[in-house]
Amino acid sequence: MVTLGEQAVISQFNLTSYLKERQKVVEEALEQSLPIIRPEKIYESMRYSLLAGGKRLRPILCLTTCELMNGTLEMAMPTACALEMIHTMSLIHDDLPAMDNDDYRRGKLTNHKVYGEDIAILAGDGLLAYAFEFVATQTRNVAPQKIIEVIARLGRTVGAAGLVGGQVLDLESEGRDDITSDTLTFIHTHKTGALLETSVVAGAILAGASEEDIQRLSRYAKNIGLAFQIVDDILDITATQEELGKTAGKDLQAQKATYPSLWGIEESRKQAQALVDDAIAQLAAYGEKAEPLRAIATYIVTRKH
Picture 1 (cartoon, helix red, strand yellow):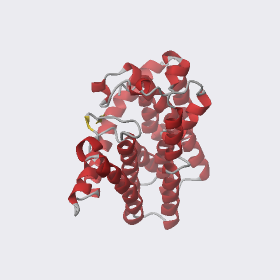
Picture 2 (cartoon, one colour):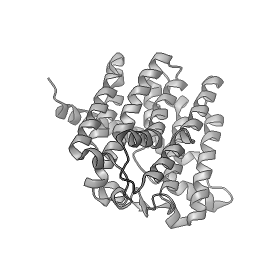
Picture 3 (tube, rainbow, N blue to C red):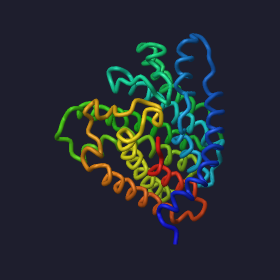
C-alpha cells in the first residue's frame, strides 16, 4: 500500500517533467500572444508582468482538463493564455499601494515600481480586456456556443460575483478580529478559487464535456482552489522571501485574517489535505488518464512556494 507521503513523492516526481513541458508550451504561446505596438510603453508594461514567469498553473489546468475530456491543446490554448492574462491583471492590481502594497512579485519588482501606478493600473486593464478579445478571435475548432459559454464564465469569474467581490471583502476584513472561517472561505473561494475553478471547467467546456463531468471537475477544482489558498497562508508564515518570490509575512503585517490565524498551522495543513483528498476522489471515474490532475492536487499541498 502506498502511503500519503510516498504518493506525494511519486506524484511530485511524475509532475516535474510534465509541468516543465507544459510550462514551456504556455510560455511560447504567451510570448506570441502580445506583440509590442504603439504606444510601446503600455505593451511593455503588460508584457513585463505577463512574461515574468510563475507556475502557469491556471493555463496548465485548462489544457490538461481539455485533453482529459478528449479535446486538444490547440482548442484550449487561447483560453489558457487568457486565464494567465486575467491572473496577471489581478496580481498587478493586488500589488498596488491601495491594495496589498507589495514591492516584489515572482522575484522581480512589481509593475508599479517599474512603470508607475498609473501605467500599472492601465496595464492591468489592458490585459483584462485583451483576454476576452483573445478567446473570441483566436479559438479554433470549437462550437461558437461553447466559446460564448467560456467568455461568459470568465466575465463572471473576474467580476463582482468572483475575484472582485472576494477582493472587496478581503480589504474590508483587514484589522478585524471577528472574521469567521465561513467569511474567510467566502473570500478565498471568490478571490483565488474562482479563477482556478474556471481554469478547469473552461477546459472541459471547450472539449464538449457532459454536465456530469463538468460538475465532477468543478468540485475537484473548488477543493484544490481552497487548498491552494490555505497553503498560501501557511507559506506566508513559514517561507522566506526568496522562496516565495514576494514579500514574506505580508498577511501578518496587514492584519489579514488567515487560516493559520483561525486554526493554527497544523490544523490548516490537515484541512488542506482533506480538501485535496476529496478533489482526488472526484477523478476516480477517469482512471490513469486523470493522473496529471491528481498529481497537481498533491503538488498543491506539498509545494514550498
